[in-house]
Length: 446
Image (cartoon, rainbow, N blue to C red; front, top):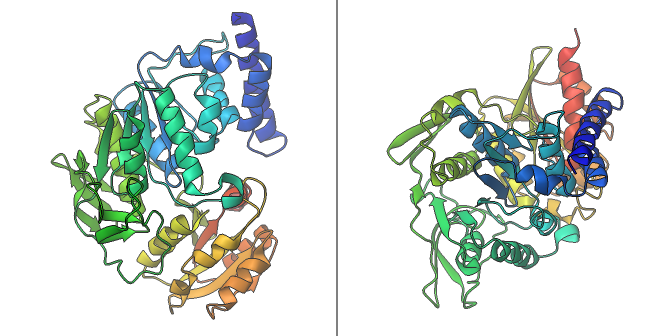
């Protein structure tokens, strides 16, 4: 068995390098697929070599940032961590994370594992190992043609939670759907949230999921919303209500960066976007629930670079470029909020694909509040990608002129040459890696 595992590790490492350097494509998924083909038990065997705990991160939005931040926080405490940094979060990507972290002898030297897992893929991953902790960020409507309604995702997660009864759930208590799921699962759970009203969201046109109590079906009443369905809620018909957070973010600041207090600690990060407060709070709650002191958490935040297209910055010919993933209505609306925090003039490039991993149904674009881009500080809007003309039609319906250029590199070059020097690139899933490659290459040009 060890020989097969060693061969699988070698094959995974060679495959990943070949994909990146020869084909200029992310090779993680193929690396994991080949490793599992050679040694079907590799994931179980390597996960069993993790000395302490395995954390997994699930939820619709924020998985990659939260998972990478949790990994960085644990590493800052002096531990070795296995992590799928690239966001490859299905079975093959999870297997690759362990195989690529193993030594050439086929063994793993790691204290912890921080693994992001696609919600629907938990059914395929959990037979290989049972995590010690699950971080559940939120549950929003996402790619209906792939996942179906939220109830389907909730049923899958409940099933795997009950399949791992010793797993502790660290849940966003401000999301009624996630909180109910944790309570209903029977697993021990810890909550994090924001008890004070930070923004006035009552006039938002956002689609709000879970407006009815999952326990009794009565309407949920909100004292206030943060965004989407996140906020302070209580059922009008039974005792279900927002739990008092075990880790409560207070004294929120959103000026040049983000800051809040939790457990008497003032945490600061040079990021934009209210949603990033939840990402930071989730990572903090997880590391503290795992028994670590998090003494170097602020130091980690100061040097943490989200990368992988999560508010990733580039500097190309004196143009500041910000790349961010936006793949569903809730996430896109929060992206728009983060963009609008920047008061300086800016150009916007939106790249929309409809490949299998994106979901082929792009009707979700009509649930995004693009009309918020109707401000003077938005100097131009360009749409690109496979479904750029659908995106152009969407912009037409909110009376925003948009240039259409299906070729992403051409669209970027145009805005670099005739833009205002401040470019935001918002992409959905399969556009992320290729667009990031274009930006990295342009950044390296003289």
